[in-house]
Image 1 (cartoon, rainbow over the protein chains, first blue to last red):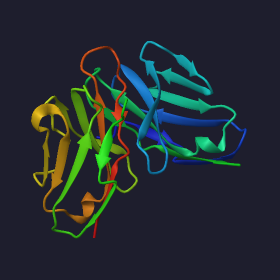
Image 2 (cartoon, rainbow over the protein chains, first blue to last red; image 1 turned 90 degrees about the horizontal axis):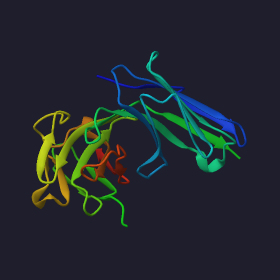
Image 3 (cartoon, rainbow over the protein chains, first blue to last red; image 1 turned 60 degrees about the horizontal axis):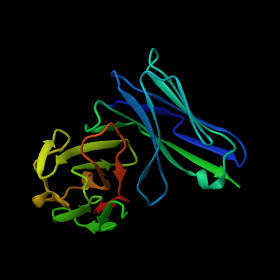
Image 4 (cartoon, rainbow over the protein chains, first blue to last red; image 1 turned 180 degrees about the vertical axis):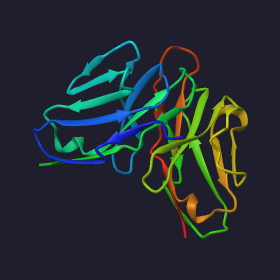
Length: 111
Length: 115
C-alpha cells in the first residue's frame, strides 16, 4: 500500500523564492527522511527527522514533522536553479529495514 | 570512497527477452536493497539482502524477477521474461550493518525500457 503522498506533485518557482513540499504517511514511524533525485542520477539523502523531533534544519533546508497529523514538510529557502530535482519523503521502521517512499515532488527553479 | 554503482545505465529490450541488472554496493556495506520506480510513480521496494541472504523479498512483483548476491558483494537482478509493465528505473542502495544510521546510499539507477 502507498505510504506517502506528496504535494504538490510539481512545483515551479523563480530563483530566490522559497519552495515548500509536503508529505503525508499512514503508519507509525520511527523517522522520516527526505531524498533528492537529480535527473539521471541516484537518490541523495538530504535530512532525517526522528519521530520525537518537530523541526530540523540543515543549511537552507528546514523539515517539520507532525506525528499527530502524520505529515511532514520540506522547506528550501532562497532556492537556486541547482535545486531543480525530484524530492521524495521516505519512512523506515528500523535502521536496516526497507524505505517506503512517497510519489515525489518535481521542483523546477527557474533562473 | 566509491559510491554505489549500477550497470547498465540504460537498457532497451523487447518483450519476452531477458535482462540482468547489476549493482555494486559501497565496499563493506552488508545491506543491499533494490527499488524501482515505474511510470513516474512512487519508488517501491523490491528486496533486501544482508550479505548474501535475502532478508526481505516481499516487494518482488512475481517470479519473473530473480535477485542474487553470491558472495555477499555485488548483486544482480534478472527479469525473465520481461513484460511491458517492467519498464522503469531500478535503483540499488546499500547501507552498513549495525549502527543507528537510517540513511541508505543509492546508485544512479538503471533505466529499463521494454518495447
